[in-house]
Length: 93
Image 1 (cartoon, rainbow, N blue to C red):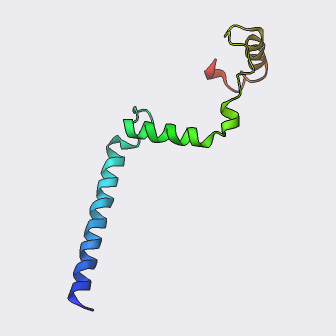
Image 2 (image 1 turned 120 degrees about the horizontal axis):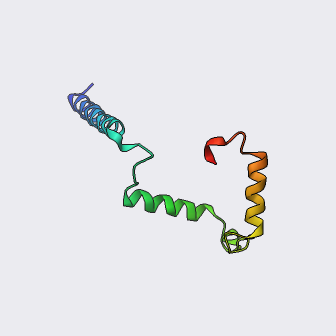
């Protein structure tokens, strides 16, 4: 093996180790906590991905429920949830 190849491999592994250490530090110092407010670039990328994942035809659909939050449909759904789901989701009521 040539000295140049060994030197390049050593530099590569040194940089790889430094990158791994930086990622480890980022994760362990709170960089991956879901409760934190995302950075601006992270929020933009997430919103872009959400927008790309929704077909155009679906974006044009209107809300099937009435626009009024106290409509009979919403009240009926809330009552149905209370009857059927509240037992298994007690903390969410």
